[in-house]
Picture (spheres, one colour):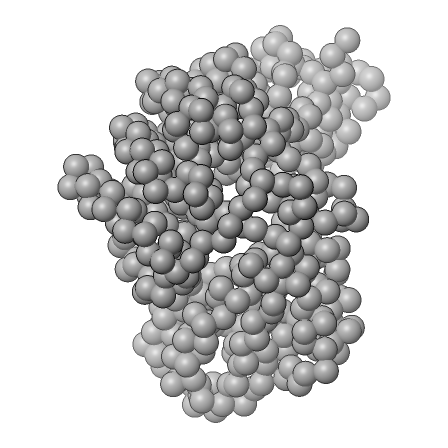
Length: 442
């Protein structure tokens, strides 16, 4: 017997609240059809008239006839966001960062998801290797998009090798099927030196260009190499010369795409420009920052927002009191963003000379010094490297050091533990430039 899906929460003012549904009730069916997962649920409730079968906490069964606007949500949050178990990854990718984690971390850190539903709901990237034809057909049937795809290479043999999965070579066939159905897609390439770069990279970008406009964007990010790679495929870090070569390839394709499709299409993550020692592209080059979650344009956007916040303050007439603020604080970040943040502080000090913010680049001893992004910093590295320093009245940390939706870092160190150890209040700064501006003045 179908046990249904347990309601966790009801939105205030929603249809579900009006119908007197409550947490603990179970949704059994929509229009007399059992619900497999979140895809089924959202597809079935889109009609203007539906029948909802609910098993109340006291065991009473309700059949509710509901008239509503098309695609209007009922306001139900379920205990499981997918209304099903997560689909794990069966690949053994040569670049997988989870395989590079040390022992002893929280068990959930070692779970590899490759779930198309998370791609639609949360923007996760999936390889499509764990997906049966039926699941691909469901994406098309339910018109779920965008779907974010970890492509890495379009060479079938090379992709099978990189993902260590004999089914990985079907990627062009799968993308072609999604393209024919008009499914919006975004692509990702994790670039590995001597593996899928050079001519292989040119082939991949060229192949995926053929799926424009439904393949809306493509990002190229360098592989992250931690110090915990014992027994794994031997990967090498990219050099400055390598980064310049990668950018030359990407820029050539951007010119072609702009001429033919009026979009840059393929984008390099910020790390490439910093490694190459080249300036970041202007904001217009990022096509609306469609690949922001892959670190594409994140620094440029933050700079834009920071400048806008300062300009708005000037236009609004800054109070004399604000201009005379005296404050000392510390900003902890990864080595990648350190020089960039120092530039923002110099601009800020031209307006607020009394605010002294020291930017401290934290070396990633936990994963290894090759990891330079702030999102992989740990609490223990932050505490060890800041202990004994005069941090001023506040320590600013970027929000991406935290686990999603939690107040703990990757190594399970809580923000309160950092505050206690360093004897300073911690303020978490959101990724937008305006929040950084406000944090400096708070």
